[in-house]
Amino acid sequence: MIANHTSNHNRLMRGFNWMSYRPDHEVQCCPGNVHRAMPNFVARQWLKGSDSELIAALYGPGQIRTDLAGVPVTITAHTAYPSEQAIDFDLQPARAVRFKFTVRIPGWCHAAKLSLNGQPLDLPLTAGTFVPVERLWRPGDSLRLDLPFELGLQRFPKGGISIDYGPLTFSLPITAHVEVESGDSPTISAGLSTKNYIHPVPKALPRISRPGS
View (cartoon, one colour):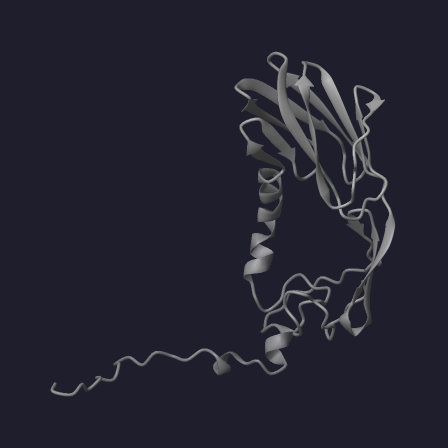
């Protein structure tokens, strides 16, 4: 996506300098909270559908230990996604047990493949859906999900375009210039002075007169 300080196609906050390449903007809570993204991602990687269903909602390397249908189960996701295009799930229930293991097919993927212990599964793998695999799972079972990346375009207002490759969005190489700003944000300097929305509180608040007082 090509953006500068005048770009105005951000779906969440229109205008100002929110689309420009810069370390921060006039709202300082975003740069300080960016480190929360990965813990929140990991916390939502696995979801419980019921006492007998586990959902792999977000993909990345990880492991979960939980009870399914009353049996302890460990599931490990082996992958470097999104640097590679497949996830291998190693399932280790304490004993053979029937439960539902559900995987997510991303909305951009139209050629997903799912295989169990090396054998392809004949299931509808529609883009943008969750696919349950319900069976009697045994220790050592392996489920592989292949998600071939596809090139795609997204169009935004004001002529904005992004080029996507699977879950990734391409970016032009940008030579960074680091400079410490000692004054206000360019947005504020351009006219949004703090005096427009910050009002000092008087030392002595005026007395409010009420009828009969």
